[in-house]
Image (cartoon, rainbow, N blue to C red):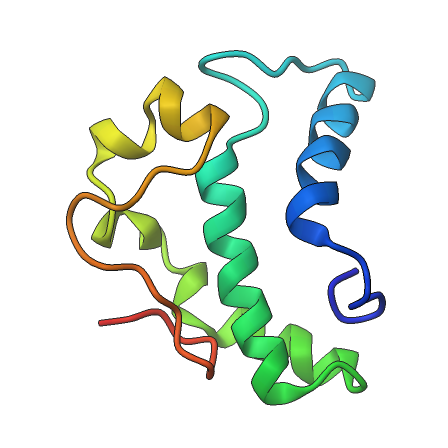
Length: 113
C-alpha cells in the first residue's frame, strides 16, 4: 500500500483501516488488545525510510529490504521504549515518545543503533 499509493496519507488512514479489520475479524480494539498506535507509527516510519531509499517501483526489492531490516528483529522497538511504556494504554491509543533512546529511522530505513 505504501509503495503503490504514496499520495494517500497513511498516517491518517492506516489506523482506522487496522481498527476496522480487527473488528471485522472478530477482534476488539481496547486498552490491551487490537490496534496499537505507537507501534503502527514506528513501523510506518521505518517502512517509509526504506521506500525512500529503495524506491516504490520495484515492490519485490522494497519487500526484501523491509524483511532484511532490523525492524523484523524480535523486540526491535524495545531498544527505544521500555516494555512498560510501549505496552501502556497511552502508547496503544496515541503516539508516545520513546523513553530509552531516540527513535529516528534514517533515510536508509535502518533503525538507529
